[in-house]
Image 1 (cartoon, helix red, strand yellow):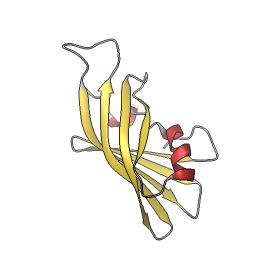
Image 2 (tube, rainbow, N blue to C red; image 1 turned 180 degrees about the vertical axis):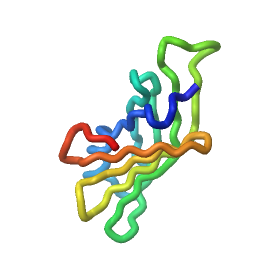
Image 3 (cartoon, helix red, strand yellow; image 1 turned 120 degrees about the vertical axis):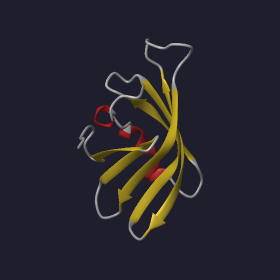
Image 4 (cartoon, one colour; image 1 turned 60 degrees about the vertical axis):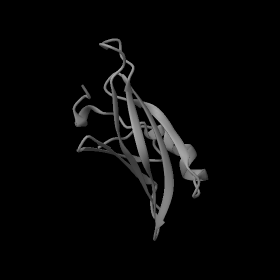
Length: 115
């Protein structure tokens, strides 16, 4: 079972490489989610630009890599959206999984800030 939305930790650190180099070609985002990093996150995102805002969005796969699994690792599919405003250094990440939306916001100049 996927942890509650509020307990997911967005792998926002993986965004740093995307922010500087993303153009229209697909990019892979990988990281860990969950209180103990028990979910492996993989997404393939493509950049879309609207005014001064960049959005990287695409399909997402979460795989449970914790020690408590029955009949193999649990997997969830959804969508990852990363929004980067051209006027600031803020990035917002959103996970959409089985009808549940989780968001995380960070300042690209600071290594760890969530809301």
